[in-house]
Amino acid sequence: MGKDLNGMKWLLVDQIQDLTIGVVSVRRKLEELDPSRMANELVWFKRMCDIYLIISLAKLFEICDKYGKEINGFPDPIRSDLRDLKAEIERKKIYQYRSKYGAHIFDKDTGKPISLQKGEELFGKIVGLDLLEYLNFYEWIFPNEGYETKKSVLKTIESARDYLISIGVSGERP
Image (tube, rainbow, N blue to C red; front, side):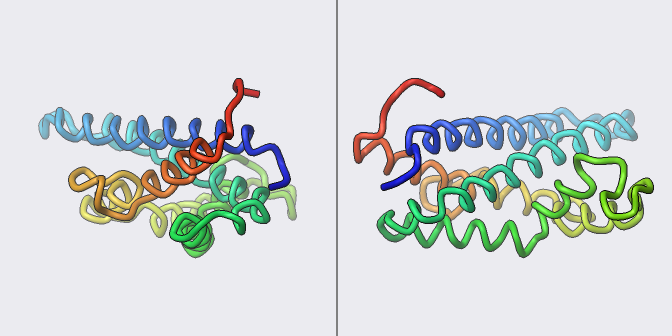
């Protein structure tokens, strides 16, 4: 099948862990929410987790991109789910956000500080602007209920990992 599928398997394992802890952490913080102390602490914590999730989703985009030929050999629905996931990450401009705003302070093209306003606008389009949109973003990654039956980011990458294991891909973490 080409490239090192054991490497792909471990990259998927890492993203499963990273995406799970990012979503679970925000949900726990929301459950502990004390409205009298809400203010900045929750906003800062949520933003930290959201950036972490965006970076992990950008890594998934890279995995789907670099292992595209191998993914073409996967059975459906795994193949189509991975393609759909990559397309959704692209549609939401998650990779672009990570590459320009989420991980840099200077614009590569101009050499000047990045536009915080443009970064915030794109950030809001990715994770949402209000609580309902935030919850939908987390639900897309890791459904709070009905995990086994709902299509989600985590379910998609777990299925790909499980497929790799089922065809005998094994080995130590590279």
